[in-house]
Amino acid sequence: MGNTLGLAPLGALPRRSPRREEPLPNPGSFDELHRLCKDVFPGQMEGVKLVVNKVLSSHFQVAHTVHLSALGLPGYHLHAAYAGDWQLSPTEVFPTVVGDLDSSGSLNAQVLLLLAERLRAKAVFQTQQSKFLTWQFDGEYRGDDYTATLTLGNPDLVGESVIVVAHFLQSLTHRLVLGGELVYHRRPGEEGAILTLAGKYSAVHWVATLNVGSGGAHASYYHRANEQVQVGVEFEANTRLQDTTFSFGYLLSLPQANMVFRGLVDSDWCVGAVLEKKMPPLPVTLALGAFLNHRRNRFHCGFSVTVG
Image (cartoon, rainbow, N blue to C red; front, side, top):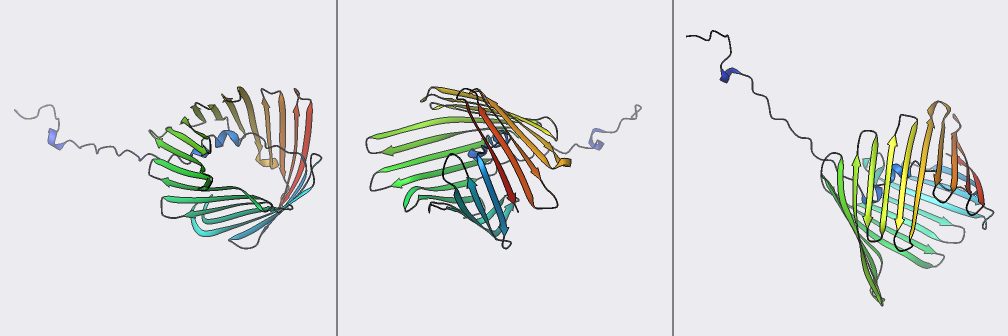
């Protein structure tokens, strides 16, 4: 008998092509795990500050900063930055050299190099007048779905002292990242190590991050409610100091008014807010901030003008 039901033979049925899984993303750097939450909180402001930025070329720019404060002497900072031709992303350009020199002669400098397609190096130097305070060397390797970093801080072969920090992050899924941090320090008469485990889960509108180890815990939660409102919650516990803090921050963006408002409240009874206002078509940004600590009965405010 023929095929009375009118069904096609099995060999004639179209075969469904196997679904290709997308590769896992790189988890980024360990230092950026809590970045989204921290960007919501306002930065401390005190006194009056004037910042003038000047772009000299496509590779070189400088900034002049004058700060007047009631808590200390007035200060001046000269900031210079050089960016090379190799741009991996809108925020990553290699090589990069950044330096900051203040009126007392203290220098903070950073050098970023791309040694290979996946290998990056960074050197950090900090001086106080004519004395070296900090010298640090970082090496970071970024694989397809993992990042490994090794840092040497203040290595001193003569004094037999060094700080070694190792980071590792692995993307297990498109949303889940796990890793850890190992800090080892050695100096005459003292030696120790601290292990910290880290995890990060990223959803469509929120990100939760947790660091926990023998030194304490650090947890943060970031939520993007809509295009204008972002909130962040942060919890930190230090076992050595026997201290815990809880902070809540929020960000309100008004693009039509060219305004950004950030506020915070924490468990130390501190309330603060910073309002930023751009003044187009002029390249000027105004910022006004105020912070009040109810427990210590301290209040400070600040005002800044940024040109360029």
